[in-house]
Length: 250
View 1 (cartoon, rainbow, N blue to C red):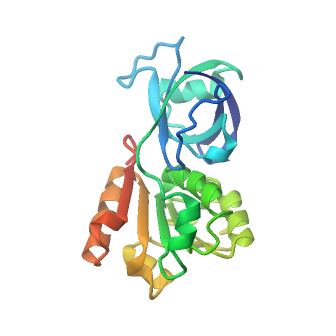
View 2: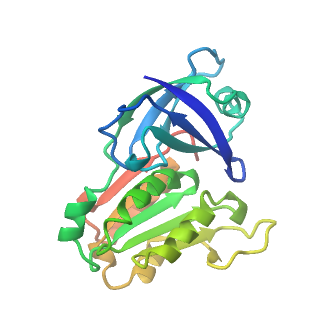
View 3: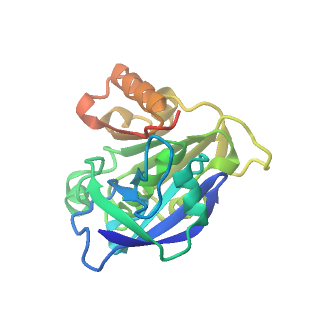
């Protein structure tokens, strides 16, 4: 389908947020956490990936027909076009794709309680599908305990930081843990910790119910693979570990 592009803002260092407005009534089968394939119809790029890219959707289904995305700026022709294309440019949209999503919120609230947490683990830009999931789930799933752990190189690189902090204040069943591996140039923000995110840290933070959790991991392939293996070694069943490796990121 043909959508209309509009740029929003820089939401972290080297990270731009943009929106695509779809035709009214499009993509009614979209579940929070899925992704789309976006393609410029009138540009030809020289890189091997061509005119299109896969992007996780950062907005919830309730915001249709508008989809929100965020991406790191890597210097590719495609990413550079996100900065230079005028608003309302045509962009081709395919999807939604993927099964990286949580169950429908209403039955989830009836069947899950505080002792079965939903745990999101995001490396860098891998946080985008979790924004979609949380905005969709938090208003409806008040009896479910949600945890979001993010790991970034610096404070400046944390994507949607202020929005997640607002959600953690608004919903008492949402626990936010932002970790950076280096302090960066900005003063360290309250609630942001310097260190290394490990499965052991997840378990220590979540506490007694950690091994009962449903885990969702998104980010670079090496980070996702390491966390999947570590959680399995810690005794989390494989059917409760869900992953979304962001190809093209380290």
